[in-house]
Image (cartoon, rainbow, N blue to C red; front, side, top):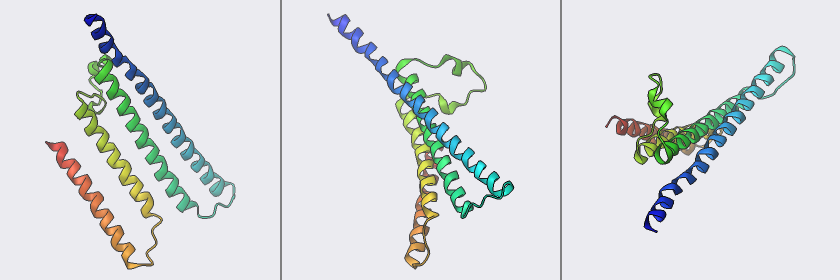
Length: 169
């Protein structure tokens, strides 16, 4: 009975495959949505520039949409790293990736701490992009807003600096 229970416990790790599949599907969905958003933006530009269709405030909207697309691509990257990391940690090493000399080490996860560190770096980048997106809507009618924005930029810079320093060790 002990062997059967241990076999069941050990093989229960394959339930993680559901999270792997969901992560990859989420990544594909986010990439498709971001791609569609950018293609729509390019189409608006073509309409405005070559077909004479007026688009008021195109530049401001374009910057916001591009930042949103970058945010979606980064979140999709998180889903990809998470899915591949779970697969490598709980199911099996991805043999084709380890044999490929051109493979990037960012997608090869060796431990849970390794996965956490890689995800934390991408999540930090998402937060930087989100901060940048919100800064676009700040009005400078109050000196305190300028101070808040400067403080926010300082904090984002410090977080990026410390993340970089932690990666060196």
